[in-house]
Image (cartoon, rainbow, N blue to C red):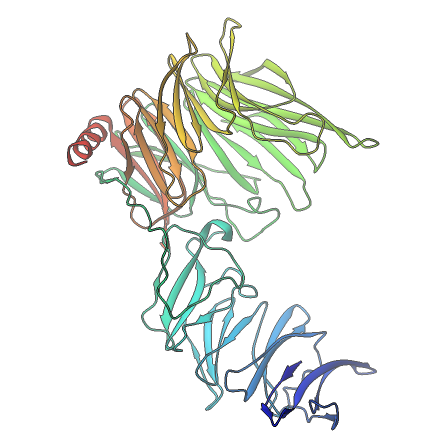
Amino acid sequence: MVATGCRDHGRPRGTIVFTTTEVGAAGERVTFYGVRPDGTGLVRLPPGPAGHAIDTGVSVYDRVSSSDGKWSSFSANEGLREGLYVVRSDGTHSHRIARDFALSSAWSPTGERLAYATSSGVALVDLANGRRRRLTNERLDDPGNEPPFWSPDGRWILYRRTDLDAGARWQDHLQLWVMRADGSGRHPVTHAFPVDWGENAVWVAADLKGTAAPKLPLVSLSTAHTITTELPIVALAAEGEQAAVAQGFGSGADFGDTGGRVGPIVVWNPRRRTTALVPVHGCGSAHDVLLAAGRVGYDCDNSSEGYTFRDTLRLGSAKLVHANGGEFAGEFLYGIVADGRTAAFGVLSQTVDVNRFRFHRRTRILESVGGRTKLVRTFRGEDDLLSLDDGRLAVEPVPCGTNRYCGAGTTVRVFSPGGRIRTFALDGRPVLGAALDGPRLVVLQRKHMTVFDLGTGHRRARWPVQLGFSSGAEMENAAGDLALYVVGAAIHVLRLSDGRDVVIETPNATEPVFARLVPSGLFYAFNEAYAKRPGRLAFVGRSELEHALASRAETG
C-alpha cells in the first residue's frame, strides 16, 4: 500500500492505492483499489490496456513509488517467471515492463525513470516517453536480489556483476560496477574484493573517512612461462617439474547448483613445454587435485542438495576410497596430501545417538604407494590431515566431543615413521594451516606464521601475517627458506629467515588463487576477472624468485 499526495491544513490529501488478489472461476486476478486517507471514497480502479491485465499473478509485492509520485512499480508472481509492472498513482495505465525468471528495480531520484535488473543485464525505462533501453548485456548472478542503485544526482547507476562465470559462487565473485544512466562509462569499483548480495549498497552524496586500503609490497615476475585455461582454476598441485590444475566449479560447488561445468585436468611441464589433458568423467565437481609418482589424483565430488555428500578419491585409474555421508552420519573425505610417490588422505566416520543427539567420530589416515593403499593411523575424534613430508604426517585435532558442532583446532601433532609423536601447542588461537618441510614445521595462524624445530620442539621464528582488510589467510606450502600463503586474491611469499613478505603481482586477479614451491621454482595459479579464458597458470624459476625478493629488499 502506497500513500500519495501531501498534507494541507492538518488533513492528508491524495489517494492510497492498493491491490488484492481475487480468486474466481477464471482463476486468480489482481485488482487495484483506491481510497482516501480518511477511509472514504473506496473505488475499484480500471485495469490497464488490453493484454496487460494482471490476471495470472499469484501475489503482488515490492510496491515502490517513483520519486515524483506519478508512478508506482511492483512485482507479480507469474508461475515460473516474474513480472515487473508499473501503474499511475491514480491506478490507470497499468502495464508490464519486463518478464523474467527474477527481477528487481529502482526508481531514479530525479524523475520517472526506472532501472531494473534481469538475468541478461540491466535495463532502463523512461515512463515520461515510454522509451526503453538495454544498458548492459551480461549475465547477472541474482537479479531478483541484486537491484541497481542510483547516484543522488540521477546521473550514474550502481550494479553488481560476477567476475567469473562457469558456476562460480557469488559469495566470492560479486563485484560492484558503475555506469552512466545511458550505459556508457562502465567500470568496476571493487577489485578482488567480493561484496555481499541484496540491498546493502548505497550511494551517498558525501566523502567518507575511514581506514585506507593497505599498500601491498608487490613484486613483478616474468610471465614468459604461462598458460591459460578455458574454465576457472579451482585447485593446483605440483611435483618436480610439472603442475596440475583442476578447472571448472561444476555442480557440486554450491549444493546442487547445476550452472557449472567441469573441464579436464591440465598437466603442464614448462621446461619441456608439454601440456596434457586428463578427462574427468562422472563427477559433479573435481577439486583437491594431487600429483603422486607422476599420476594425477583428484576428489570426484557428486554431492547434492540436502546434505548428501559423495566423494571418490581417484589416483590415475585407481579409486582409492569412496565416502558417502549425510547431515549427521556417514563417512567424509577429510584432507588430501601427497609427497613424492605417496598420497595420503583422511576419512572421517561419524555416527549419532539419536536418542541423546550425541555424536561419535573417528578419523582414519590412509596412504597409497604404488597403487597399494594401507591404513597408517586411526584417531579417536576428528583430525584434519594437513601435510605429508618424508613419511611424517601433520594433523590438527579438532575439538568436538560428542556435540554436533566442533570448535577450532589450536594444536598440531606430528607423527614420525618410527612412531614418535610430538604435539605443538601454540597460543590457544586457531590453526589455519601447517606445512612440513624437512626438519621444520611451519604453522599459519590469523596474525602470525611460526616456524618450529621438529627435533627439539622449540620455536625458531615467528613473523607477522599481512591481512589487510581480510579476516584470514590460507596456507599453501613451505620449502627451503620460503613459505606461501594467500589472502583474498594476493599470493604472499614469506622469507622465513628474516620475515620479508612480498606479494606476487597478478593483474586483475580474482579468487581462488594458489601457489606451490618445487625445487626448481614456483608454480602459481589465479583467475583473471571477466576474461573469456580466465585460468592462469605460471612458473617462475628459483633464481628469478630469489632475485625478485632481493630487489624488493633493496628498494624496501
